[in-house]
Image 1 (tube, rainbow, N blue to C red):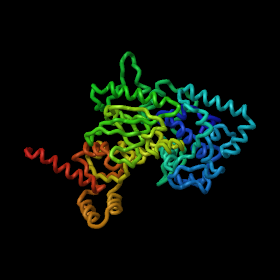
Image 2 (cartoon, helix red, strand yellow; image 1 turned 90 degrees about the horizontal axis):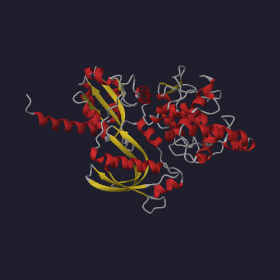
Image 3 (tube, one colour; image 1 turned 180 degrees about the vertical axis):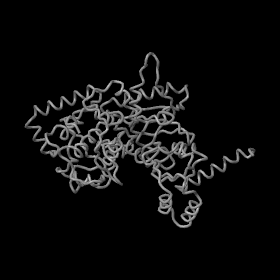
Image 4 (cartoon, rainbow, N blue to C red; image 1 turned 45 degrees about the vertical axis):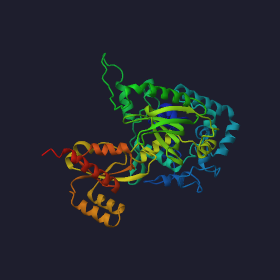
Length: 467
């Protein structure tokens, strides 16, 4: 790796590339990933052998009393790297400086530290990604003071970017690096396209979105189910949310929302986290009250055209759920990074639903034409016939297990079997599976197989006139 990569401060184009989306939203994770890379490939590396897991990294990097569960670590040990602030990671002369050492250094070399701060702030400002409360961000945010899930997600992201190799069930260092954007200038259009979470699509759009010899050659068509008479409403909500997110303190909101599945209007208080366009329309991802579950505080997605009213509240409002207010007081409000991690863990946009194992079978021809060598989700992987048998044996019990194993024995071992982790009852996954009929058979989970079987039998009744 060229020495420029290990300069004192990470270059913004590199962080943008690591973020694979909006750097303004994902700055914390991008900085963590840069630190991880320094530990894996820099002069000061973690003492771990390959293949390694997140647990190996945790033991090598943190103190023994660092939480091994998914609790967010408090300031449990001043010698634990999770106690270090963003400034300590970025501006200390040595990666191994602990927080107390950094504070002493910052006091003794205030002028040099201030120069580095201003250099980094200027770079963030130039790329329009400076956090609103940048002093607090640098001096109070603990870069590694996050959950196990977030840190494990960092390693998974590095593996997806081909900066870590997949070795067995763990990770390894790579010898052939992808092309990295250090030392380069990004065009403004790339930054404007950073919201595209698929980096290849952003690169294509940047390359081809301009006219070539007077002709436009790049077009994007997406399904968009929002009717034209609601476009103004969607634009109004986007504008209001953008203004809300530009405040130094983002406030909670009270939503009046048309609940399509229940066919009634709901009113809920939520913390607005981000907007997602997913498959057919734009959604607000909100954390707070759940309609019909008075004691629950959780995530839900709200399609923008079904929002009827937005009322901005204060954090002192009596309408707020107590647990949501407590998270605000503790500085532990959810972020878009949480959603990215959960969506990487399981297939589906209902990232707040429980995970389940999906096992499906395709006929050979359909698999060769449309499934093989296509990316549906990182967990959607082809397995062999024996692995499918073992998965059924591990998942089901008793008479049902025997029934499904007998059924599988009647299927060809030359067919294509795929395993995935998906979000239970996610409508987007179900729609995708339905679109593959009649070339797909759902084997697991059993409730989904039952549902699809009933649907197919009902559908067959519509075509009894066909001989």
